[in-house]
Image: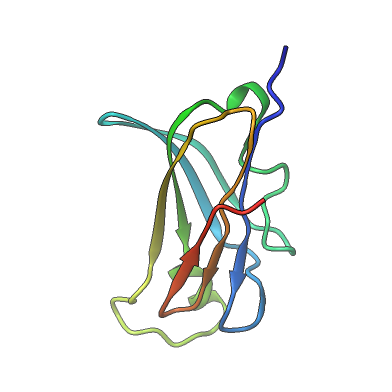
Length: 120
């Protein structure tokens, strides 16, 4: 029987007050010292990834990392940033304990701060 678990994300731009469109998002699985890229995509008009990050039998218990390329996003929006940028790539490392569950890992971000949580 296939698992119904899923891993999703979205990015909200707190500087401009809306979804962050076109943010590059990389998902990696971390097993010890071995890091494997599983997905590399960009957020859509709603700040989400079409189809989510992982679902069903592709989601396993273990450690993952999502890298959000926010420096490129803010530069593309015309935001003047210092060189080097304060936030360039924001890594969020987390664990999935129940692969049948829904793990939602959003990012709320400005050029100067970010926040994340396990959403629903």
